[in-house]
Image 1 (cartoon, rainbow, N blue to C red):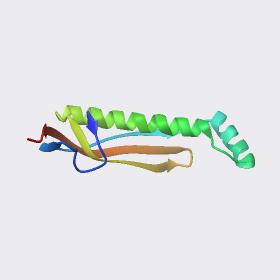
Image 2 (tube, rainbow, N blue to C red):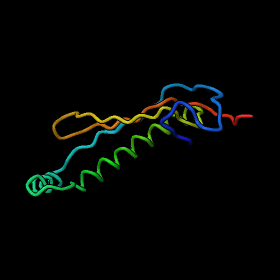
Image 3 (spheres, rainbow, N blue to C red):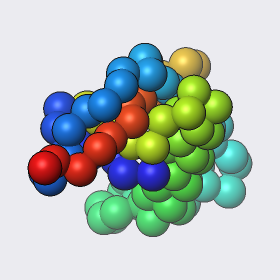
Length: 107
């Protein structure tokens, strides 16, 4: 699956638009991470557990978006976007979305 943030893929033409695709996940904090986060707020620095958690959430959302595109028969996703929103004070949603297409090589 080719995935790009642009509305085109160099060397290819869009053969067919398959439509909007998306994937999302909601991740919540846990007590262990919150304790470490509280300590980092005192001394400063990156909260690596949260960084890892959000990276995993992005990968899961992208994976679900790819699955949605494959179900539509696409071989690429153009105009990929990622967004994060707070669902509650202890949970965030990550959503990945874009346009599913099929491609053909330029002549």
